[in-house]
Length: 351
Ligand SMILES: NC(=O)c1ccc[n+]([C@@H]2O[C@H](COP(=O)([O-])OP(=O)(O)OC[C@H]3O[C@@H](n4cnc5c(N)ncnc54)[C@H](OP(=O)(O)O)[C@@H]3O)[C@@H](O)[C@H]2O)c1
Image (tube, rainbow, N blue to C red):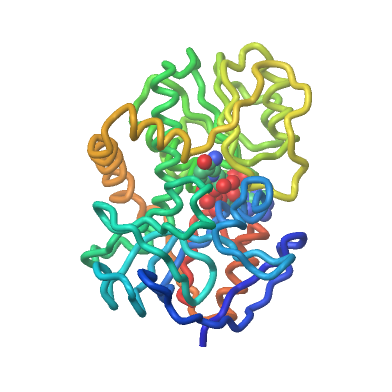
């Protein structure tokens, strides 16, 4: 039976699984059955900013409810498209639903969904990549790929700007997969101290990664010895942490970059802070720019090389746990929402 996992837009803890109807396919349409997807804080951020950044617009739902976007794999169940066959598999952006109907426009490696309601949204979310073989990396790809590409793009921005002259790059929510990706790249690049800010319960995990030169708890931030000038890359989105960084470093803060919102229940916003005005980083914009600056093929080559190095090491620190069935899916969603999943766990759902 077809279903949608719905969350109340005004209370992300309120969930329900609703039966869905599958309308007959229109001309050129394809229906995919969702096989598996990852759940991380990134998906919660999609929901938190569902209205403001239009993440709810990808997969419409009944009034007051949203379908949280996830990254994963699906198999073509029915096709009215001449070039797409039943049984083909695609990696991409799906709803937490049993099915997704798309209007494919063929691309080099797969298709783009040309459904009219998605055309005003960032193009990277509308791309679906054909899966041609099982390389044994599907879980890691669903878990890490959308996050690591962000890390790659931030590392590229910092490199382009000569690290803004900083001696330390400070990452909040240092235990998050996106921050880990950035720490990996910065460590590899060398020349700056990579400082991880995290909660006390995650210090041991963050230290064990080997990518951070220094690990500091949020509580110790005001006094820990950190070399300046510093750059702050904020994955936590917590006004308290952001304020503490700016008040401590003031003009010794060379750049302040807002990326994420893992601490989604904390107060948000920058307010009037000493030091540089925080700049919002949106990966799809930088991705588009680099696709144009370089060629698409060069982007793929550079990113592909960086990805291979990261994913080859990921099994050392990331334990994939697969939740099977709808009850396990709900439990996993709530664990990720409430920050109970643990940074060493990669949550995959097979609904
Ligand atoms: N701007 C962009 O283009 C872009 C692109 C990709 C990702 N992002 C953002 O980067 C952030 C990281 O995403 P991710 O998927 O990599 O995260 P993740 O791996 O799921 O992060 C887990 C960590 O986040 C913190 N956390 C998670 N839930 C929490 C909660 N309920 N309360 C308090 N802390 C919580 C904890 O870290 P600590 O204890 O270390 O704080 C936890 O260990 C997300 O906000 C995501 O949206 C932004």
